[in-house]
Amino acid sequence: MKKLLTILIVLAVLVAGGLAALGFGLRSVIQEQTLNALGNMTMSPQGKAYTATAEQVNFSPLSREMSIRGLSLQGERPQGPETWQVAEISFRLPVRMLLVFTPLRNMVLDGKDMVDVAENVVLRNLAMTAPDNRVAVQREEIDVIRAMPFLVRQTLERHEPVDMVAATYSMGADNTHAHFITVDIPGPSGSTRLSLKETSMRGWQGRTIDSIALDGLEVRVDGTPGISIGHIRQEGLTLPDEDLLRRIVDASGQADPDEALNQLMPLMETVLGAEPPLLRKAYAADMTFAVETSSVQVKEAVFEWLSNAPVHTRSSVKGLTAPSSLLRALLDLTLPPLNMDMAFESRSSGAASHKTALVSAAGLGVLDCEVKLNEKPGTNALEDLLTQSFSDFSLKYKDEGLTAWLGLNISTNVPQAVGALEALAALPGVRAGQQNDAIRRSLQTFAARPGSLEIQTTPGRTALVLDLIALLDNPGMLLTVTAKPGEHALREQMEALRLTFEAIQAVSSGQ
Image (cartoon, rainbow, N blue to C red):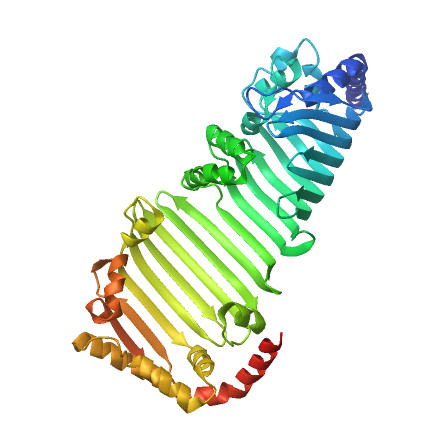
């Protein structure tokens, strides 16, 4: 047993010594070729490679650690020069990669599976400067970077620059983390700064990425806060086809923002229609959006792209809140502070789709709606809308105070406001008829004692959006309306809310 242990120790020492000796012999080669490889990149198939320089490049044969200080990459974009600067990069070369710097390269890179290229990668103080933006990253860490063997060979041999857009599909990484990121974008109407406390990416393997997370996102325009989001997480990402991604990159690089947008819109429609979907799930929490002189908050939002064949999506928003003063400024209505939840679902196959929506606002009401749509392409957006047909429309509304608040906005004189709502419920501009009279009775029941209201189209009947114009004086031709009275009369509800209404109105008007 002692002999076996001795033999194993000797073999381990010999292997370690052999690797160290190999490292010492290749030290200058590794340092030179690594620096050259970092510059052998471009953002387009016909682009020129970057010019790479460094203040210091050092490889430690014993630990296989590579350290590069004062790295600078100089390149060109259509808009002008681009510069990447990194105060320090450090990483460890896997044992297999040592052999890549020897005559055994072709044998080592003969496989068709990704190989580990670098381990324990750390970048410190990265900065990218271009004519249209500037990016700064305080620190980035990557557990492992992988690449296809042919890409490693192309990068090192420098026969032609590596197209980084194409290379994205032949690379991968485990557990990427970046800290304290800022992006500055100058513009004709002011400068925009996007900042992030931390980002992370897991499971990048060619076209697919398991998840991307962003923490502490803030967007400021000319120093004024615009958007802040505590946490964003995207799961199940699949990049579009390489050619499509190339076209998106090229369109994004257009000098004219309007032209860039015109090119990007149809491309993004193609991306969203691809199978598998661009992403399976997106989640965001603790959001604040500056609006007017106030703000809107959202506790969380979720979006799920379940499939594209057929298209099936589901989304929800929870805890959307806004102060009464903002509602007054936007809607010219006095309402209680908004606290709303929403849920949406859509299924579609070809031109046909089925959509549902559920919206609830505390102290106001709950709205549950569904409809089937059939789209008929037109020559423009307006024609698209007017030629769209729908069927099986259903809207269910449960009142929890909204009708009383609307009545008080008409007048704080309760009898006068109740009379005005009752007059509206009588549908003075609608023609007489059995169906229309039934609708009148239902609306009058609801106006007297707000409870629940249900509006439906004739089952199985299809109508054009254009037909809605005819409903203005004859809704009974398509709709049925039923109502269930509530527990309290509208007059009672308004009297109970009147003092609260007047207090909110006074505060909102004073801001």
